[in-house]
Length: 386
Image (cartoon, rainbow, N blue to C red; front, side, top):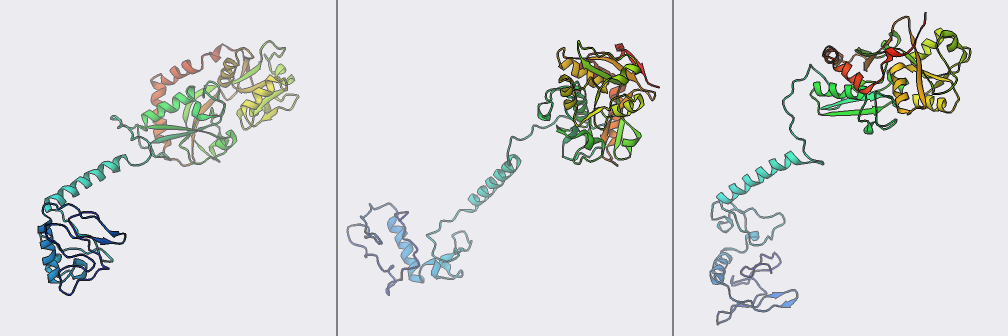
């Protein structure tokens, strides 16, 4: 038995005809001793007499004389009512143990405590630590991110000088011109997080990427690309730079020199358009990724890589003397202008343009270029293409 001073309400027991107690219990003996309790495992020892036992038994006997155990009575019986007037609610199936009731004040305190606990738990539920509250921030304009409180940016790695830290894993990127630009945009949009994803360059410029807010991948703005994606205003300008193995015999100082060598280019870049004007004797080798082009140059499979001057300068710096930028081409239409790509019809382009204009006028973009792209392209020999 649980509490020694109480008799269990067992639905399997019947009242004796005299109504003095359930069958199966010895009648009370003299000398103040407790009756023996007969259970399934046999006769138990007599427990010591506890204070208040006699009064409890008298109350119990009085209840039994009226009509039996609570579970054998209806809710209208006077014996199944609380001392506070709340009616006794019999458990489903009947036969509960002697139920103690909580006073009205106790119920109120318990309900309030549970309510406060629930509110506290709801604020800290879920995995991870709760976010720290952000300080006051006024967004530069309306912006609808694809993921709440996050600026999602896609790029095509590697991006020497623009995305530094890894050639394939965006989570390891910690520096670079476009990385720093993305952080500045995120801050001025009052967003908490920056998420970077690596995508194919072809897919980015072809409008085949979904689930992103902005693409920053040294993408030159062209009318052809505008048919499938929308651009922000330009944030960077660059000519086409010539990258060769340092100390080699390859010299590119004129159009005639450019026609004699084996070029390597990345697919879907404006370098291909420029070589279509130059018309080299050998068909350029086209690579899916820029990293593959640099690997082919290092292996001697090609003579030079043509890509934006700023990108090739970044790769030359990372190569620690293996590569060098020997010249650049000035195109008739002027330098390539890099713009951020947004999905066609995006409502966010106006706010992004506003932020970029502020960063440019304040000198912040120039400061990022000095920090992340250390070599001045203006000092390189320039070949004019007519």
